[in-house]
Amino acid sequence: MSADRIPYSPIVTRPRLRWPNDARVAVWVVPNVEHYEYRPDPIGMRDPWPRMPHPDVLGYGTRDYGNRVGLWRMMEVTDRLNIPCTVSLNLANWEHYPDICAAMIERDWDVLCHGVYNTQYHWGLAEDDERAIIADCVETYRRFTGKQLAGWFSPAATFTHNTPDLVAEAGITYYCDWYHDDQPTRMRVRNGQLVTVPYQMDVNDAMVWRHPFEGEEFARMVTDHFDTLWDEGAEHGRVVCIALHPYIMGHPHRIRHLERALRHIVEHDGVWLATGKQIADWYVAQQPAGES
Image (cartoon, rainbow, N blue to C red; front, side, top):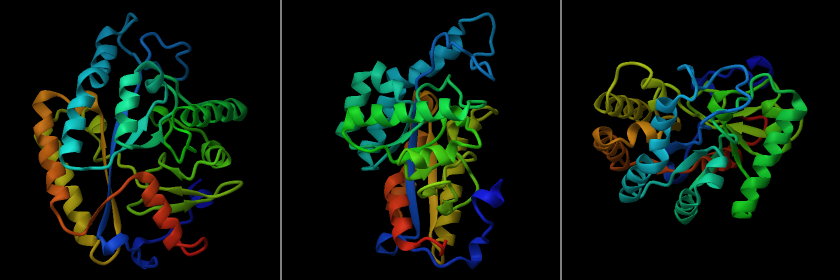
């Protein structure tokens, strides 16, 4: 699969990648702002609410906290630090919560589409069914913003063999379902072009949250991750992705640790604070097809 989609390329032998103003790292901060259905139907290949019997009020309420409280607390931090964000967005969120939509548009946050609901998975979808969902997302985003959707990350990290081809077909230019590199890479698709932009699952609060952890430990992971890539970026540009969820790091006992980690990043020289689209566009301009 990877040999077909992305030929192997050792990072140490690639053409030198530089960022604007010769920055060492391109940093994108990605809050995942989602909507979980209270009683999803159909459930599909995996039950999003494994606690029984349904409805899982605890599971639903935990995530609802992010939209009611955690996001707004997180926005205060990113505003204070002047960080441009790329929201990994379930587009139904904007339908359900106009206040959230307005706040993101006011801040000019880039949108990385995360499907419609985080309880509606793409695993096992027929090609035409998945194509229709992607087309609906493109049209919904255009209705809200008047713009073409640029980025795609499948809901709940579920996708099919066809997903890269279908998002490229829909005019989407960058893609985040694969976690294979510290630089953007070109992905082979049936028609058009598609670039992967590094999205982190290791430095991702939702992955860490599944194990015993607290905010201080996550902040240490973020700063260690950044420091290594910043050092390596002196020779060859890297991408730092900080993937967040307001229902996790937006809690009162974690938010100060998040702010400390983000402040560590923004106070360094040689950092390009960017959006996913900016990173993808710069990479395509610097690395013509056939040279990546």
